[in-house]
Image (cartoon, rainbow over all chains, first blue to last red; front, side, top):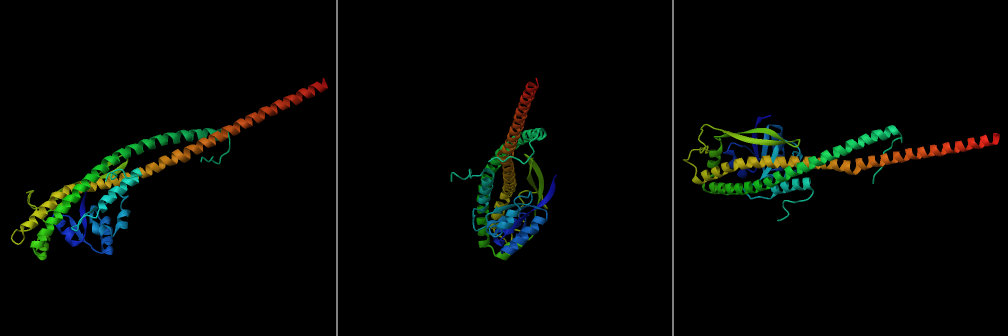
Length: 109
Length: 219
């Protein structure tokens, strides 16, 4: 089954403005309530991928976790213009730990 | 610790239990194979995921820093105005792929725009904006395919991790609870039936002895 979908970006205005020029749908959100509401709204619509700036992602970690088991949307944390917080890497690490029971990818670091 | 099931020790129950044990063993083997294969796929994907994430984070870092440069030399209003109406529209094509009964997303994107020129990614005229903004936008547009690949991989990794956890739980339940319990119960019924058999035999021998005794007294 193939269908068309959209890409959303949530985060602080400065970090996401660049994505707007590329044709992504951007949604500025700074506060926790704002971001949560945006996230839930987008998840209900046909957004298959939602990128969320890490600074915002850490505020709404609970809401993100609840979409983890669903096929769509894929919620992907990306670094904002204040640099990476390592949240994205942590979620990769978390899924390794969940599947394998121990962290085998990041051990050497 | 294996607990025996609460059943009547009869031959019929024994046959049923033996059949169930066979099914459980077969299911256990199949699930174990599934788990191993899922794990193989997962490790493959998660390795790519890690590399892709490192790459995307690095590229975005660059894009952001050039965007900051652009903001420094151009007033905010002008930048916002310039980016207000994107020229291109990205539409995402979503389909799914089946990996060991897990549906993972496959993403591909198309860009629609007024012009077919691939280099034409700037949604603004060049009169009011600076060259830095052009650089920033170009860097951003370079990241897009990688970002989509990252989304695909990361979601796949998450879904597979979920499925592995579920499968592992089932394998363990069969291996450490279901199968030992069945074995224990089968053993119990066998012993009980044997015991009945022996009891019956002794009783018959006793009766025979008594009958012989009676015959001797008469004769």
